[in-house]
Length: 208
Image (cartoon, rainbow, N blue to C red; front, side, top):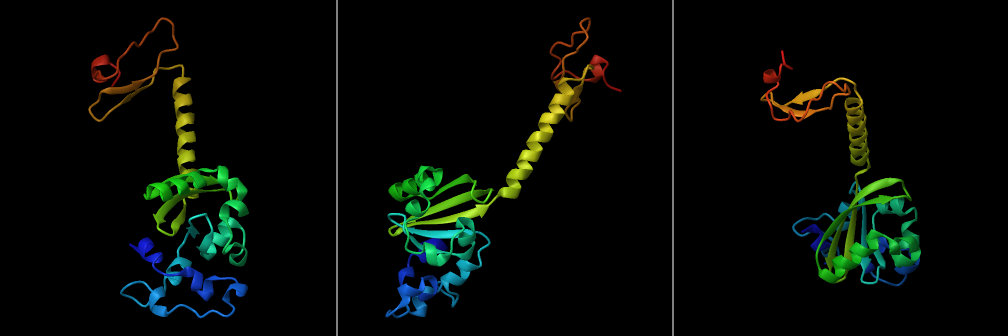
């Protein structure tokens, strides 16, 4: 699995991922330790071309790697974030579900996933957290458009139900077998529909 292999490389020694002051006097790690097993593609190349934000956090929440999408999400540069404690840099996150799930993933040793609305960037994310001996990897999948579509559908259903239930006429909806699946109550006092659900529409004189 890619996430498991990711922690096999020592990001702390990769000069391309660190701030300038971290690179002084140290040699870059060998290429073989930074590539995906069975290929010559560096891990960082894959993470940098991911469509969504990706973070690697140490045991105490120290940021050991982030791709450029994560920079946009967190609204800070890589130089500002690498080596910092995410819960101190963004104190509001400590009271969020992100902090709780990171703690659970690390303590239980199990992957976690949940939906998270970010007021910072006004987007919804499906977050996946993968634990390892070194900490956790956090992957942010942008699901904003899906959530907007769900909300539009919900509002459409509410308008449709309000239209149906406030109509003075009796409205019946039938299934593929011609049985009444849903029916509104009559607003006319002299006419009571009663419970006609699951009864044939033709038998009630309501069909063509």
